[in-house]
Length: 121
Image (tube, rainbow, N blue to C red; front, side):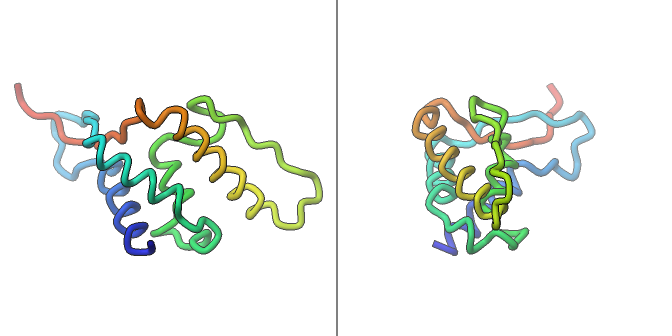
């Protein structure tokens, strides 16, 4: 699973980064649906607690890079519990569950977009 998570987060970073040489600007193109499904399945299955402090392989950060986060795309905003002894873990658990529900309902329509350099026409 860790190898799949490294691959998924690496691909997300590649897709969401701006190309180095884009004098005409950048446009977004959908990656193949099969790739999106594999990446999302990997992120949803990953152990979000295990990788909570790993900035390179953090499933929660990777999902956010895709523009899917609380308060957007129909995902509710998080409501913290007062005096929670471990608010970070509570948030990660909640976020992962919400992403899973959201993807089950919207996965067929969801596309990961890649930033690519515009070409001359």
